[in-house]
Image 1: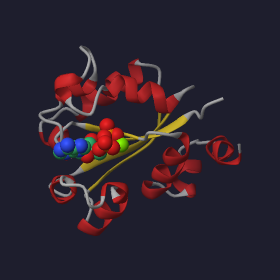
Image 2: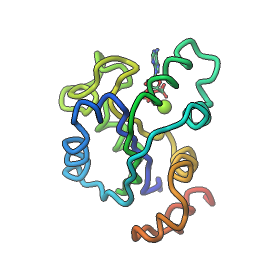
Image 3: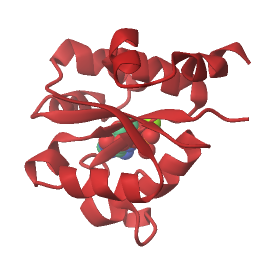
Image 4: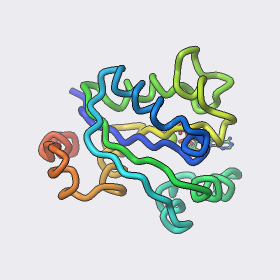
Length: 154
Ligand code: ADP
Ligand code: MG
């Protein structure tokens, strides 16, 4: 059984363009519970750490620059099959290839400025959630930490 939680980010371009509210509304309408949210600005070191897996790729430096260019929203969202369902709702990384109706199709400007982030596996979701949120914040938001941890104990 797949996990019920994933991490979503609303990237700086979408925040600057005023799309954050619309995106959260679409997430809620798709059946996700928005468990915990924060607005923050990443430092260079934080963005490099979050995107470490892409270190060395040609787009890494510009990705870090973009992700530190303005405020972002980070949110823990909850639903059965959260990782796959959020990736489906986001659409393909390249908005030119994203399906009609997806968030990236509607709000992305380019492959890099693609409006939103989503974790790509249950294991990464757990790591990414705890990159942005502490256990205390998740519990205070009404989150069930056991549900989050179950996926790492499979
Ligand atoms: P996703 O966000 O769909 O999981 P990746 O994990 O492959 O996609 O890439 C992380 C982010 O890096 C993308 O969302 C996008 O902002 C940026 N990115 C990926 N590939 C490219 C590329 N070829 N050129 C520019 N930016 C890219
Ligand atoms: Mg990815």
